[in-house]
Structure formats: C-alpha cells, structure tokens
Length: 411
Image (tube, rainbow, N blue to C red; front, top):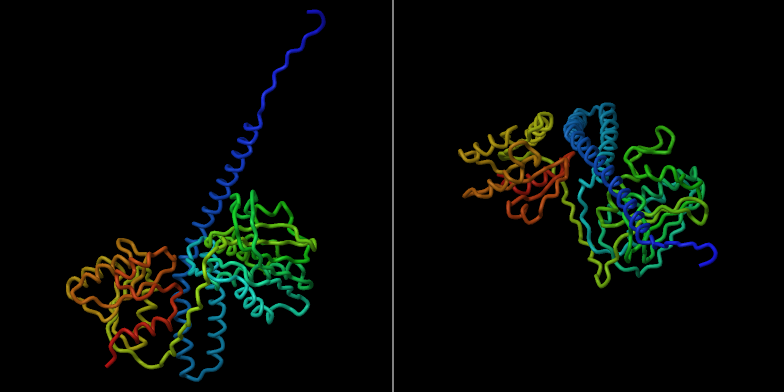
C-alpha cells in the first residue's frame, strides 16, 4: 500500500505495576517487622537483667527503711525513701521496655472505652498545667473493645504528655472516642495495611506537628525529639507495644489545628456486652513475724541472697538452691517445706516445670512463681501445677508476705 505504515504494540501493565507496588509494600513491612522484633528482643533482654538487679536493690532499700524507722532515724529514713523513689522510676521505665517488647502481658476484658478515657483525663488534670486544656469528645454508647484498662490509661497519659510537650505547655488537647471503618490505610508503627471496623481513640494537639522524616523512627525505644533530660524516649514505644498487643494499629496524621493527631484503632466487638468491673479486694498487711519453712529456688545470686534475707527477716526458715535440679533432688529426698518460691527462668528447669514435679508428690506444698521476663505462661498449665500466683520482678514484697501468711499454717 502507498504511504507510511506504523505498527504499534500495546500491553496492559496495570497488574504488573500493582504487583510491584505490593512487593515494595511487603518488603517495607518485613523490614519494619524485623527492625521492631530485633529492638524488642534487645529491649526485653536488657529489661530482664535490670529487673533482677532492681529486685535486690529495692528489696534491701525496703528493709533498710524498716530498720531506720525502728531506730527513729528520720534523716536516714528520708534519704532511703528518696533512693527508693528513684528506684521505682527505674522500675516504671523497665515496665515500659517490657511493654514495647511485648513481654509484659496484658489482662484484657470487654469494656467500653469512654469511661476509661474519662477517668484517665480526670487523673491527669492534676498533673497537667492550667495553661493546657482538655477538650474531651466522648459521645458514649460506642461498641466495646477488648482492653486492659490500666494499659489504655498508660496510652492516654503518654499521648497527652507528648501533646503537652509539643505545645510547650500552652494550648488545647482534643481527646476523642468514636467508631470508624478503615480501608487501605497503613499502620504508622508496624507498616501493615489496616482494614476493618474499629473503635478509635485520637489525641490531637495544637503544636507544630511531626516532621515526616521522623515518622520511621517515631516508635523506636529511646528515640526522642525532646531536649536532653525531658523524656526517656519510651513513651511512644510503649504505646506501640500495648496497641499491637491488643490487636490494634496506630495512624499519625496532621490535626485540623495544624498539630499532630495520633489515632489508636482497637478492634470493635460487635454483639459483645461489656464485662462488669470486678471488685478488687485489697487485704490489709498485718505486721508481725511468720513461722514456717520456705523452699527458695533462684539462679541469680543477688536476687537469691536478698530473698533469703527478706524471708528470714519475717521469721521464716529458708532452704535456698541455685540449681533447680538440685532442688528437685532435695524434694524427692524428703525436703518438706511449707511453701515453694521459684524463679521461672532458670537453666535446666523452669519454675513451672519444678512446680509440676512438686504437684506429683503425695503431699504437695503451695507454690508461687516470680519472673522478670514476663513469659507467656498458660493459665491452664499454671492451675494444673497448683501455682498460686505469678509475681513480676521487681517482686512485690507485700504480696509475697500476704501469700505466705495466707498459705503457711501459723501456730
């Protein structure tokens, strides 16, 4: 034919582009997951070691305060109490590290979010300067979510403190609860796509907002944009741990005021009635000496030495072992204590495994386990082994006293 001829080929590459975009997104999710997992292992390991150290430090401080009080040395008591307050701050920081690493397990129940938020804001009103105003938007009637109220309060407090600092202590913080449906959005901390029906807790401020270049590091432990000495860098890391422990996600956006808006999304529970708040009974700690024989198994020398001193100070006889296998041999050879107190993480045998062997005895004795690493111990297995309670390090000495008083026959 006359004239020029052009032959063209067209190929639809839409699917290829979508597949490439999906591959990049999955790679980003994998890198983020690997980074957060590595940081979690490191943080959890450090927290575990420091928990062991703090157990003996705080324990000896408590014993020293008791002795100084008996000697009526008010100055010494004041010094020791200040040291104990500093140690308690370290304990709180370690709990935050464990929460980020998701080693601190929550105790969730079905509950409405609004009452928890309202109570948290009321508690914070005394610690936030009068130049900062809360604007709560709590409509009521939202569907329940499965939450640990204590940990949700921690989320609110951390987000509000960050908002306060972003505004240099002057401005308005809007705290809202609402139901929302999301589709094709990306979690700011885990980078996974978020889709479904949620109950949203959002905290907005009137500050300068968050630089996009900082978003990749925003939830890393010990990363902070605040001036030196003004923050530990664990606030948002702890929020990350709690939210994802509850099956939720976090979105970071620009607020209408121009500041930052952090949206916490928790899975909605349709058709679920909120659990009634259980009445918490706190027993009064009676002073006085105890009587009985305690078997202590702890492989950390500093913790074991303190626990022996603490138990003996209450008038108890203590048989202590570093090696759980040696303790098991003693039990099988006739050691017959009134109570067993076992560390969970030990070489050769865990505290739970040792408790299970105790349960096989013809006359088993009551056992409590304590741990600094917050392992995911199965409730059914604990009950089957006869474990009365799992205590967290640094060990609550008042609680140990109560357990011993309640389960060792006193003459």
